[in-house]
Length: 224
Image 1 (cartoon, helix red, strand yellow):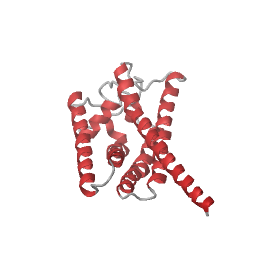
Image 2 (cartoon, one colour; image 1 turned 90 degrees about the horizontal axis):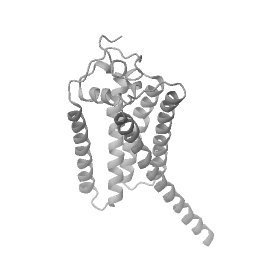
Image 3 (cartoon, rainbow, N blue to C red; image 1 turned 30 degrees about the vertical axis):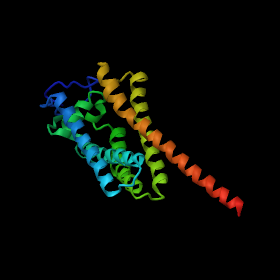
Image 4 (cartoon, one colour; image 1 turned 45 degrees about the vertical axis):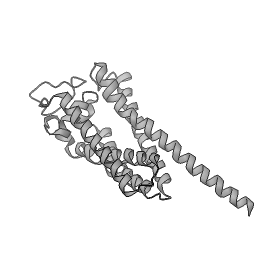
């Protein structure tokens, strides 16, 4: 057990080797936000340079899937590799995870469901996000079928993530988030809800595109 009391809920959670973050929260958030901004800016500029005729909507889609793929493969990949000694980490990713874990302590306890879900995300859904970005940039016909799979994975994963945590809280009386509303609504709810809203939009767009293509094909067959 840790020699220092930890700030995570439930208070009896087994957080081994806890050490408080050495970097202020605001500095951590600015660093993370700045890195994401640079990534999006470089992606936007690169798509404009390599594919100048690409529609703006497609360039935005590429930015989204590159951002998702990067977070999945590298940030969540960090958790997959270091999950058993996260509580003492003092590097940027480690401190960010420790801050986020104030809204979900399962990331500090190597929770089985969270670890398995994140491992699948890192090894499968993250790389497929980059595949969708590439297929979008090249206007490949497989873009929408693969995009449907990736978006469905995000919707399913987020729903399962929400459901298991809330079930333990309201049914078993075992909350994983600190009681301050800031942690629950901003970290736990809002940061994850983005990966429901945006994938739902792209899922709808892909289904609509595939459906329209099938209708055109059927129309051509009827005229023959």
